[in-house]
Length: 427
Picture 1 (cartoon, rainbow, N blue to C red):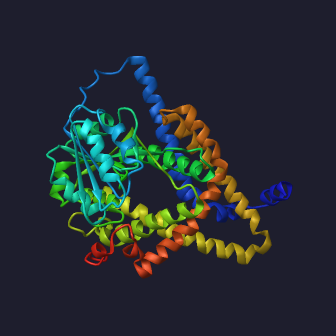
Picture 2: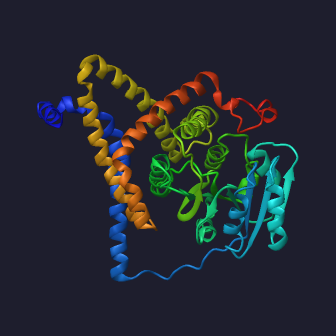
Picture 3: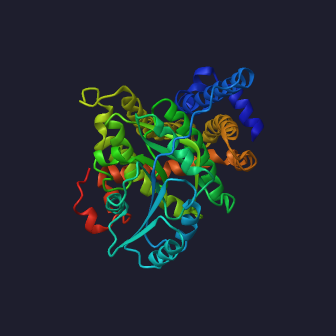
């Protein structure tokens, strides 16, 4: 089979080969391959320069007052571990735990912890209102300068709070994205692939996006927000995804979104394909179409009163890579099926080999930037399977976009209770 494919590949003219690899070369190759390699090489040279001539004086650490906000629903099994990882990890810290209508022992477990640990406020709402409403409710009980949102089933890594607040020394920064990683990456193939994806998209991807002022999301699982900015824009709107919506709202007000690549939080991941696809359906239904194409569409319109070139590049990039290229891929697939029939495996295998090269380059950048190189080097060994994994998610993403575009499926998501959804403007 490989011999047959190599003979077929060698018989192609360059323009024929381009018909198979146009998306790889123009979009993914440039965006995920060459750009990351260029950034990594620049950082290697910078590190070498500092090693030769020495670094300047180390700035004093920024230590603003911080409120760690832990909102959860039925998180009795995990909230104690989360509190242990947060409490005492930062000098000027208060913790607010809000049980949002939980029916398990989350409130009592949190109270047990608060009785023996100072600086922990535990509250409970009798009825579930959704994460956005719950966080807005809790916001009125703190005067801290920085609000750090942490999922009630996540655990912070060492120095995570110190690291996530450092970018706030720049008054233009409104929010900082932490790095969310998988808690048990080697449980099975599903968690392994997700862990690699988190490293690629969050650790490396958001680091580069923030440097170019193109970061458009702060993870709801672990993110920091300047409290004054958060209050000025009215807090969180009803999600999902409330994290993307809030981040875009801050960008529209002219604030920069920074990344703290080594401020780590470890979270649970879906362990089955069914659970993973359900999670991604929820994320994808409410992300691109609802926010980038409806609610915040003016970020990509040059005649908008709040137009900024960085917002335009961010939004146009989302439109092109997630919608235009998605449509182009399906048109290409149909054309290939019609013109090649049973021989279609040859161009598909060619595309797979091309993506292997890109994934190898990305794996190398992950290991370079990793602060746990042995673990992440093992994680990156799954890169030959990643193109297949991404193909599965492409099918899921297509269906999610169609459901949101034609039926506004995100407004039927039980992540937000019905009594809240029915009063929300349907973007």
